[in-house]
Length: 401
Image (tube, rainbow, N blue to C red):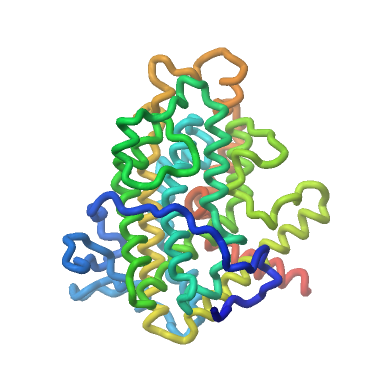
């Protein structure tokens, strides 16, 4: 098999014998209630389901985002420029704000991680099945980038911190309703919905990713690159900041980052021992992101039509990711199972106290969280995806001077 991946020194494991994640089918034919970024929605294969067209505007005379761009530029530049406005909706998401500020109960936070696991499981399966696609091959390195395994580890660990009354697993009856292989973590009752009847934003996202993944046209399946770009570059840019917030919110003090492995890539481990290792880890982070951008440019080349499609697809990916925040159940509006009248989080037991988000926060902390959120385009994996490239160039220029 031809190996197209460059910069092998950046790979933790260049072996191609990686185990594919469990198959995650789409559960619902529903389309989003809003047409994100005026993307055209068309039926596919006569099966009654719908998909987004990667080109916005359709025949209604509207202009696509890519119409404003110089398509002679590298695709990595076009994706950054072509999605700068896409984060506005995320800034107004109450779910994203609560996530960044540590305002969720632990069970609801775990539920959010399960949502993310389903997204990454589907995306990484699609990337695996299309790993020889010339558009995707230069950036395909699951040993370096895959997030689904880390999410599963976090969920497994965090579930052990909940009271036993909150973590009783599903019954055999509910088990029979789950039409996808079980995930590599237990399913308490408050997680069943994610697998039995997923919320519409999650179902929409899974269906869209599967539609791209199973398309025999390499240019269509190649649009998975836009989704990988939005997810992975966000993780690489904002993960450590969010990871630190999560540790503080849920009082996670494990030296091996148990409970927050999702936010840290393997090459970032061991970066807290000294200033030298912190500097090395930061340099390594920049190198990985630069490698990813070069890989995108290599895979897409000078194909202007494909560049245009990928810019449109990245805006769709951003919209689908933003819509995911609506599945977060805010404490004041829709209590989660462990925050009902018998809420164990209100108990005076020492163990429960360690899993309740800290309510004592200085004004400076709150202001800092809000400012970071507004500047960095959302929470979690989307944080700082657009600001970081400018900062990296600026810091590199300063060092050269």
